[in-house]
Image: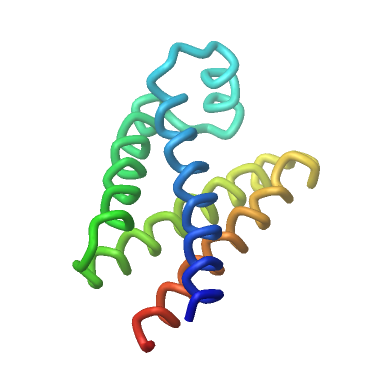
Length: 121
């Protein structure tokens, strides 16, 4: 049980740090971020919406209880990461730009799997 709990918190802390960093950096003026948004064809206002959703997802995973809300947070994080990956692939970016997202998706799956292992113990 101790190993399961440690692995859960390692995976979860990494994915929560990624999502918080991503959300906070959205609210900091960054011309390079605007260029990337235009490159992948996203309107700028969608990033603010996604940033708020990421912050709410982080809160959902940290607050004890609410298992259904946690499931939604995991799903939202997956769709965010998968959508970002697909967007870069769709505009023809090289693999070096989008392949690291699979590491983040693997971290998310690790957190999700160990969340369920903890629930069954």
